[in-house]
Length: 213
Image (cartoon, rainbow, N blue to C red):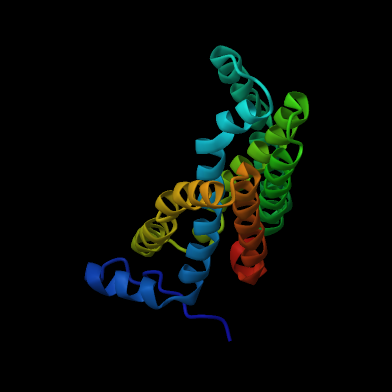
């Protein structure tokens, strides 16, 4: 049997906020999506914090050149985000689009760490990683909003945000710590990519009847 909905069925009835948030914390779907969002934000911060460093490690030393090259992946991501969103809305397959986008971002980020001293290859891989990562992030909130409404949506989204955004603290320290520990900047990127792949897999445990409608 499907999990009970906690949308308001009687608009005139006022439910205490603590009751609404209590239901959110007891809803397994919210915890699953919090895990997905946590892994997604690890990827977001991994790219945001370390993209210029990856470009620098590829052999570029001029600060201005690093800045210009670091902007290219974000420019490539703009049309990708739009086209991915259009496709997801038309096909009603948000989970599949999210999973493919996040997995593509993971592969691009991992390859960026692997190509080493090749600026062209590094930037190309970062374009794939950034476009995939940001496309997945833009698709994510369509999943919880597909089955939450009203005050339940506010409580669910707040819960997911609170838990998921802890990754903003974890990701930079994880990458930095692994880089220092191993002496290899690619190891941190591989760890971020692994987290993104976990997130891409976790989205599949949300039933299609909920996330894709």
